[in-house]
Image (cartoon, rainbow, N blue to C red; front, side, top):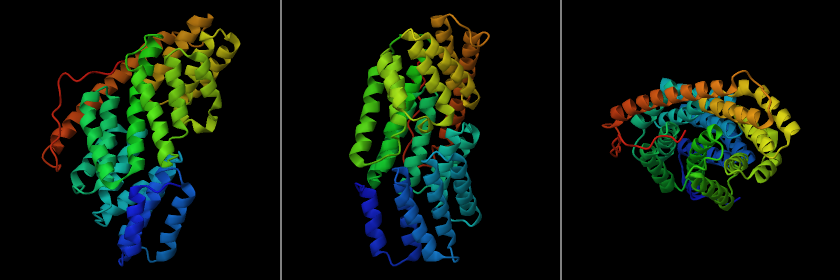
Length: 383
């Protein structure tokens, strides 16, 4: 395994540190880093090392960092309920016992999980907590919290407003040499750009959005970067992203080959219907009617596990296109349902953007660096 600059620095500090709590904090940070890079065995080894060292005499701050490391490890292995449980416990302990150093990182990771679970009001609260309390040199918390802010703005279709926050996140991650955070940033930028393109194409197949080439380049760049640094965190998601972009580009045979090479368990549950709907559209476009019919029905079976309105809109719009292509109906008024889901998504975007605007106003006098002004002419999401 290639050792990142952050892991090398943590290792150097642990070897030289005479203080047990500082040693344990760095060991837990290393465990988090290893978990984020997909090295579960090494992460667990570091966690167990700390637990063995302290036994039943666990220091409060160490307990916070341990539970956070366990939460991060669960999160990157798609064990979201366990991840939330451990991270929530770490955060609650940090608040109750006034463990000031751990609280911003715990809040930042809860914001990540809230965003992933579409708990947007809670996400805004945790973002405010992390960004308000983090010291200027708390690069761990700030790299993660600023990335969540960027992702949320990007999700709202406000890339111009998201860009300064992506830059902040990159700055904090680069200072520490946190390659896992840089990988996450690159992946998220590519994924949100691709999500905009996919949604536009689902409602107007073949519209060839101008950002398709850029999104494809970004996805390929993430894959090359992860290979170079030895990170396996996104190895399950990059092929899915590439298959979806091939679908938008109407390279249906290539897209199907990538879809079929992806193991079912590698696709997060909430994205199952999205992937299957794209697959059904590829099959229908190639005239494989029986296969498209089977795939469309499977999409319907997976739809209850698709909570986000934008993904629901994408799935329904794809199904509507499949219906027209093969001359069959899978749902009553599929196209109407798709437009209704898109309208819900638009309302959600506007509401979230307003909350983020208000948050940035509140944060303007609390953070160590000025926040970029909100631009009134920021480009909106493509679809």
